[in-house]
Length: 249
Ligand code: PGA
Image (cartoon, rainbow, N blue to C red; front, side):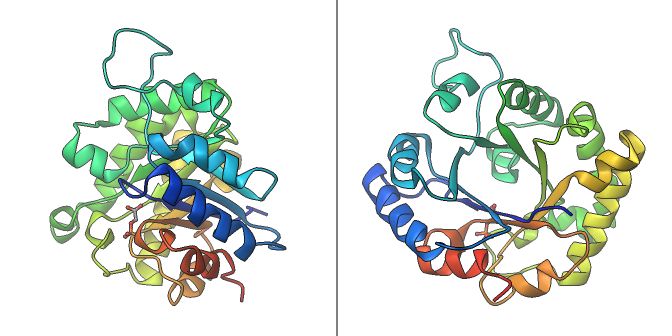
């Protein structure tokens, strides 16, 4: 009942030309796929070329971050209406790299998610614990804090997607086991039910992120609360990401 989503986060990789080439290949490679939403999030500078290359296909294009004000004196920032104007339908918010390196907090996540949803885009909001937090048995406390403080007001929106990304699994080749992913996803859904409603918690898609690859995606997707993937490294190559999109085989 929850349509799976496979989203590629390209981080700070690819020029506009490279992005367009990869997306053209991806469009060919996922032709005929049904029952999966496919999203690619290139850097801001490649969004326009990416939208052009994906036109008429099932591949949607999204941004990796945004600012919450709709315009103003905020040097270097990009507003949600500007992202929407390019033809993007999605925006990632609160990625752990933004939290770790660029001062993103639960409070700024809340404001950004609000802005993304208010302008009619789908928001992929990220949560996840660090290795230190997991080793200190704080995983559930961290996830609960991030969901409650950053997402509570938005949980009933059908355009909110949550991504669970354990920081220790991102870019490390160390994927969470399917059981670890399921445990965290079920917990997030339980917190969402308490913070919002049972119906909202049942409806919200929760993606797993952190070293998702063609050879581990099927096991992750077999978990009842895993509704898709947020894929970094393996999304940069059209062939490998297409295999992930075709996780059903
Ligand atoms: P990874 O990145 O797939 O390269 O681990 C995931 C992410 O950061 O979204």
